[in-house]
Length: 128
Image (tube, rainbow, N blue to C red; front, side):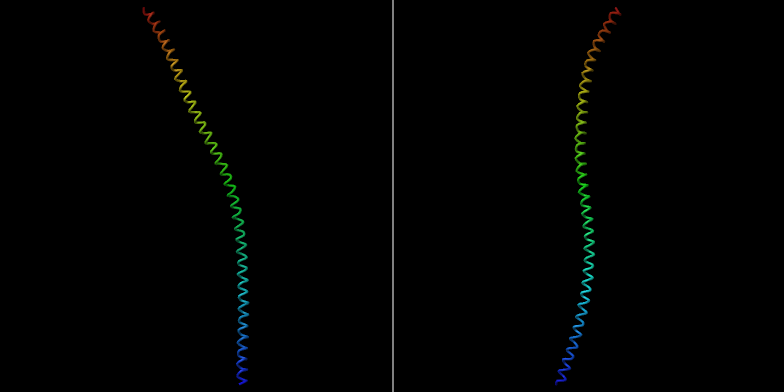
């Protein structure tokens, strides 16, 4: 019986050693995989840091573009106001010009009527 127990213990020991060896190999393989994953994650983090830096630069440039756009919009508003003022001034001058033109025409009509009367009266006296 002792031989059977010894054989059984020997088999258990051998299986345990094999199991331990397999587990050690599995642990080594798993650690290697995790090391590879860590390396990949580190590379990805590096790439993400670069992308983040690029996004920061793009955001900064967009901020500058927004500032320039705001300045352009203000300039355009000022220009629109000046153009509106210029057209209002032109309209006012046109109205003044039209009024003065009518006044001049009415004065000339009076002068022309007087001249026509003088010419008619001279013609009338000459014909007599």
